Amino acid sequence: YMVDGVQYIAVQAGWGVDAERMMGGIDGLLPEDRRPPKMTQGGVIWVFALGKDQSKQQAAAQ
Image (cartoon, rainbow, N blue to C red; front, top):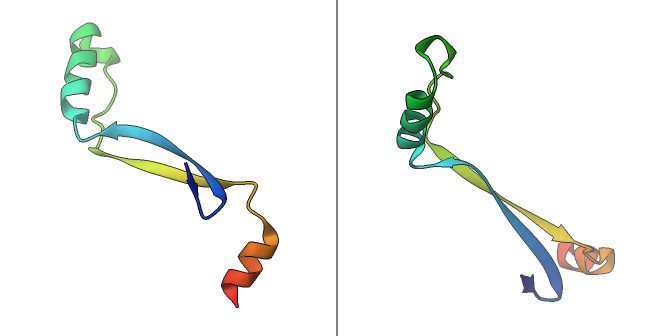
C-alpha cells in the first residue's frame, strides 16, 4: 500500500490466535514422542517502507 508517496509492504507471521487448534491437528498426525512443544498464541504483522526518500524523512524529522 502507499501513504503520502511512500510504498509499504506488510507481512503476517506466526500462528495467530488459533495456535492450540493447529497444534492439535499436528499432534494427531505424529507419534507422541515426535510431537513439538506447545506453541503460544499470537502473531505479528511486520511493515516495511520501500524506497523511502531520505529528503522526505529528514523534512519530517525537523
